[in-house]
Image (cartoon, rainbow over all chains, first blue to last red; front, side, top):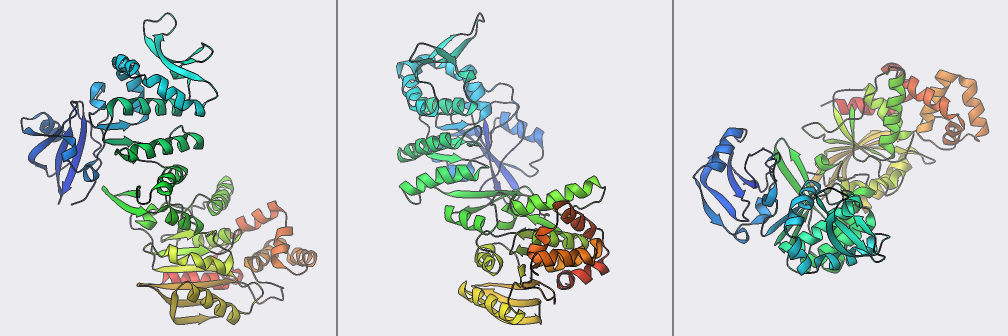
Length: 290
Length: 237
């Protein structure tokens, strides 16, 4: 059985879809909006190109088994989220899995944050996280506020500074916004698995070093963290720190999608460096190495 | 032959730069490519920097334009020392490696002996050796991996104090800019071909390289004999 398959199809319902290949057929696993894993029983798609069939399966009565996420071997079955559903709402945020990406963060700012503001304030999360993030910006933030923006009726998150000024979070750097939101969501949801797509996006090395330290604390706290990146710098910083503190705590996988099949090769940081010295950038050499 | 570069570093920049300059003159030079569905089994290792990378790109383009090869320029060491990267490069599926190296101040026999010493230090056994002079093919084994190493050594039988890719490029200068120009350059550079080529203005260097791209194979063979023989050899099944 091939271990991993990214499923790129649009499905009309909210939720995450996971797939499993067996021989040439495809079994579907759906992560529903309610934070449960729903398994499609004994249903296989011989021709995974059939979009209609997928839609029928998802909405059909044959979705019967509800499995708690922890019972599922996520190492083998992590897939992609559906795109184009129009509304993300709570479907983005699973009870036990947190998936961070730029798209999701934008939606979470609009919907999830206002909906969970009270919970956040009661746990003093804004204060705690803004204080942590002060080392990354040249402003002394002390808390997060939710206030109207000019005369519009929309309320917007702001950062309150020591001197009483307010900065709209939307005006902060995008990397900083994503990081702030990731930290808030992690504290609220306490996921068992954190997925972060393109972790290097909008992040400078200083911010990536901070993220590496944060990830290390999550791992040590028992969270499994899976990040994807196109940046060697991000690999060096994140895997480098985790390896420095505790050996074999992280795995670097080079992935290559070859004719619909996702192939992988485990690499160590040393190997990446030796390859670089030998004139091979692993990102350009995926076909050379896998 | 199309080259699949393994990093977006200097080699890529130089070859792509030449390609863009040629494009402005409406001369196609599409030698860099992404890897085909079936990854190449041939790797070209450039032991020195530029213009070695440009020379091999031009020759690859002129010979067997359909097949593919990986191109690397190791940073681990220059010339023979670049062969220290072989154990790492053999973690791929390549079966044949062409190493483009400079003869420098050694005789060809001495050069071959020193190359074999380096291979031995890296745990690579040489079981058979074919060819002579500046082109030889070594049948090698590294652990369980069996591969052919084609040693392609830059240099011509000229009374220069060292032998490098510039030996060949000065022949091209002779062809395009006249013998007098080469004599003038060599005189100023104390008979050192690399320094002589370096004394040529950048525009003239570009001109020579671009004209090489338009030469017929038979004329290229006169300038780069061992390189053309090696490319012919690689084209044979």
